[in-house]
Image (tube, rainbow, N blue to C red; front, side, top):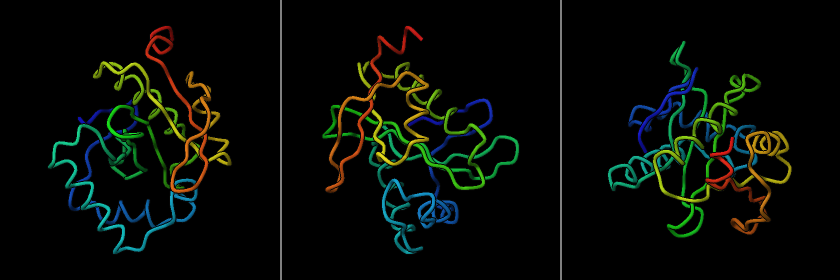
Length: 171
């Protein structure tokens, strides 16, 4: 995925020297509690290398590093990933605790959704959330995503939201 910027954020591919940032995200139980179990440093480093390999393989989207424009500090991740197979995509974001409450999630959803529909011909973009993650659900509703049922991921039932291109263009 090509890098992009929001008003206050820089979204770019992870780089080999981003191990500390990757672990600050993936190793923090508070941050990943709605996503997956926290990773050890070794697991996080391996996960970083997997993502770097996907970039090299030409994977069209993926997980991205997010930092503040003003300070250059890492604040979280943004992703566009396959939902099932290679037909549908879902948007995702996560922020480290120091970035909570600053509106960064809203910026990532707003800009990420716009960029997806501007750069692709896809008709629908999905988002998945843990049913207990009310903050993310509220954010998705605020940007026009609609609940579209549930999605099973590794034996866990998640809420599936969608945004249609036509609905996005009417915003």
